[in-house]
Amino acid sequence: MAGKIYLIPMTLGDIPVENVIPDIVKRIINSIDVYIVENVRTTRRYLSKCGIEKPINELVFFELNKFTKPHELEKYIEPIFQNQNIGIVSEAGIAGVADPGAEIVKLAHKKGIQVVPLSGPSSIILALSASGMNGQNFAFNGYLPVNSDERKKQILFLEKRSKTENQAQIFMETPYRNNQMIDDILSICNLETNLCIATDITLDTEFIRTQNIQLWKVNKPNLNKRPTIFIIMSK
Amino acid sequence: MAGKIYLIPMTLGDIPVENVIPDIVKRIINSIDVYIVENVRTTRRYLSKCGIEKPINELVFFELNKFTKPHELEKYIEPIFQNQNIGIVSEAGIAGVADPGAEIVKLAHKKGIQVVPLSGPSSIILALSASGMNGQNFAFNGYLPVNSDERKKQILFLEKRSKTENQAQIFMETPYRNNQMIDDILSICNLETNLCIATDITLDTEFIRTQNIQLWKVNKPNLNKRPTIFIIMSK
Image (cartoon, rainbow over the protein chains, first blue to last red):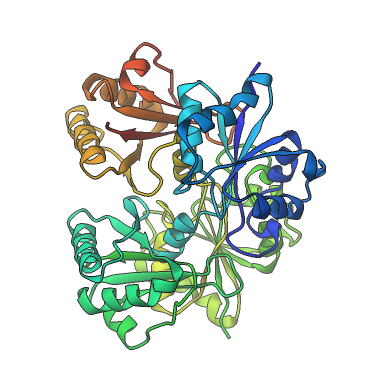
């Protein structure tokens, strides 16, 4: 008998769990004894916020980050073969998308272990849905280069591709560099190009607006340290 | 005073609402009197499944589909300016992504109306998260061409791009043509290319597996009429 791997979503900030997480998550965490997580402390706090009924100090936590070695991953998933379920908890949003959990999922498929994704907030999809841009054809490009010249080159490439392929181009930046990002976008994109800025998604301070570069130029928001998704779509 | 547009998510099939929809949705639908929807009948049924407390026959429903004309959209959003909230309800999953609701959202941004996306199940993101593939760089390509020759050409293009750009390529097919789709993929992709098949996501019959084409060839699933997301990633 084998257990399953559950991908447990987390809120995108300090908001009530019921705003973005379905009730089933509260039920499923009571069937899990072993967790593979990026940060044990935040995971404990989150599980208790979800109203977990198991004693948290009886749970097993394995830490997964860029220092984790491949042979350790093998060890982490061993409990599966003793019929135990494992939970992978993201630090924010959907587990396994753009976080180290993907390495565990990859290994799970090699071993024929069932992976069950649980619904939760995805800043990428929520931004796209509220942008009014092309949801039939889009690409998420993760973080752009840090160097300003390379970043500008990449922004221009994405602006061009959004036009030639009619594909909305989504990307992000480390929050403390958001203002440099918006400066770069406004300095090089076509005035007619549409830009969606989606900030603090699902939080009380949420701000989501789509307009062209010309309009953004006369009304530039301060995005410093606020998690933001950018989407561009050239006309 | 202006109301807001809420993007209301729906389950991906006939399952309990609490499996995928956060509680806040139940609260928010009680603050909405006007809905813009693809199908009035399924929306009424869904709102009642969510435990709506307002009398459903006192709600206003506007139908939005490919026959809806631009000047009708303007009329649909008028209640916003009388301080009423409007709900856009998807037929499945997140509203506004790959559904006609995006047209209303586009108009909302032009008029400066606030659009609030609510968290729910996205088959695209759930499939990606459970695939173990690259969540830092991916593209959703919607439906591929129906014609088999053109479809094969497009599959080869996506297989190549997944390699040259290290970008996971996501696409789908009308469920009754899924078996033709998988036949086409297996007949032309490289044996080493990884394919994730994610079927009946969030349903009791959920099936999600990532393996290479060679392994899929000896173990081809029957996907007829089962909603499926395909993801390819060349090595």
